[in-house]
Image 1 (cartoon, rainbow, N blue to C red):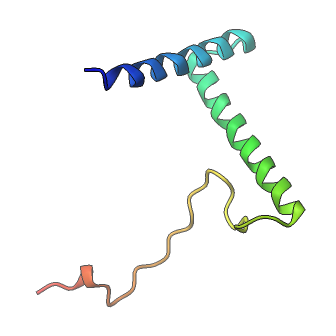
Image 2: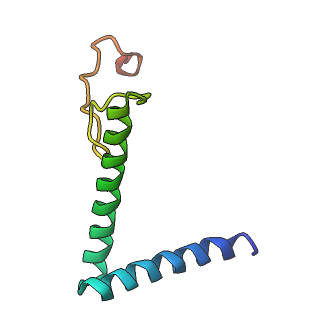
Length: 84
């Protein structure tokens, strides 16, 4: 039972952040949540760009932050494709 309290508290804390953001920007809760996600992704991209400009980036920016990597085609001889 004590395992659920931190999760519930974190959910309520997140809801409060979204609610306060929505009130301050005149948005609905869903719009505020989407805007907060966009803002977070933008900040992450800016941090990555700053690190790369310094020359300390351990990873290259092949795909934008938050985007999924392009799927490669499955090999013809993949084991999961073998059927009897």
